[in-house]
Length: 319
Image (tube, rainbow, N blue to C red; front, side, top):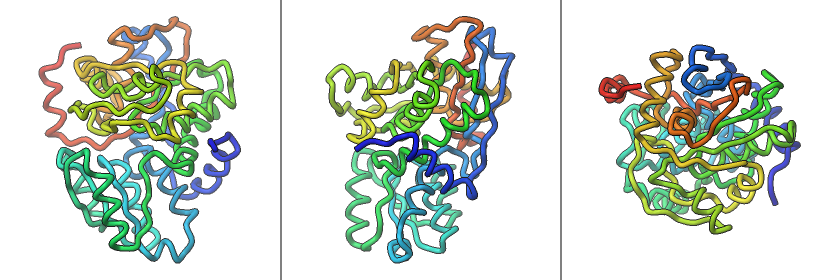
């Protein structure tokens, strides 16, 4: 089974009272750098600072009251955990979030401030640790990406993009496990078949490029990227066929160009976001894809959880 546009519209109706319809912003000043008409879908302005609230809400709001009372558990690099913790607090239940030791301190602190318990471990162990805690506590697991309710929730951002600007020609989406790209690509391709969709992932973690080439989900070696929100090693087995069917190309972006794009967004676009959000623009700066100057291209800015300390790295980056 896969998700449909109907599933995504149902998710939109379910979560609409609880989320922000984030703005679609025209960043004309960036046109000269990216050689197209630049728009951004600013999910960095979502209530919990990232798109992840959409999927988490859609999943958790479908649980029974009895399931919710048992508490919820999630494995996360940060943004999904914050969304789950926020929703748990809203519904008056407990949440335990399993995070990698490498997660930025600002993300860990934000989750703790919402009243959730944080357990940290090695990145490659987070799903196993979360499953063990879930079994011990008889709690409900809320997956970060490989779940149809999560995928449909994330896809609501795609509906909003075309509602806000039906003329958009291309959407560029950050990619990790695939919940966002599967949902958004399904939504926009169903609404406007002519639209192009590109997925951007770290070059050191090319899980989707490798999987498309192999024709099945492929696990890549765990490596570190400045894109701390895009650390999944393997596409979700539910996400992969959906994303592969609706995405025109996956682009593997070097951290060097991601950093340039991050600085460009901050200094020229005046958009404060986390590094992972800049990966789509990084792909263009790297020359991995090219546009016509008349093309209306929407870059999905996936999150904004960043500290002043993290921004210091941009002082040494040249545009």
